[in-house]
Length: 136
Image 1: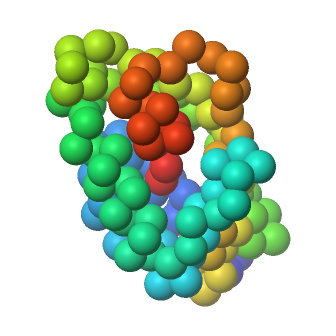
Image 2: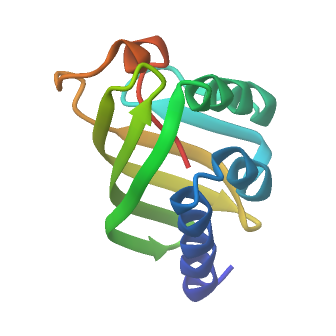
C-alpha cells in the first residue's frame, strides 16, 4: 500500500471516529488478528476481544463531543496521530483525553495499534474501568 493510500485510510478512520462510529470503524479498518495495546500493558488480541472492550467503553459514553487530530503521518505501513477526545460520560461528567496512537498496517488493515497517554492525569472512574477512554 502506498504512503498516499495509507494516509487516505487513516483519514477515513478519523472520519468514522469523529462521527462516534467507533465499533463500525473497528470492523472496517482492523484485521481479524489485530492487537491493541495501552502504553506498556500487554496487548488485547483479536478483533472480537477488542470490539468487546471498546463496546464496554462506548456503553459509558452519553454524548460524543469531539475528536480532533492535531498531527498525523504515514509511511512504510505505519501511521501515527496525536489527538484529543471529548465526551460526556453516562454519569454526566465531561471527559477530555489527549493521546498519541501508533498503528501498524498490513494489506490496508490495522494489525497493531498502541496508545500512549499520561497515566498520571486526572481520569474518571469510567476510564479506570476501561484502562483509558478510547481506541480507533
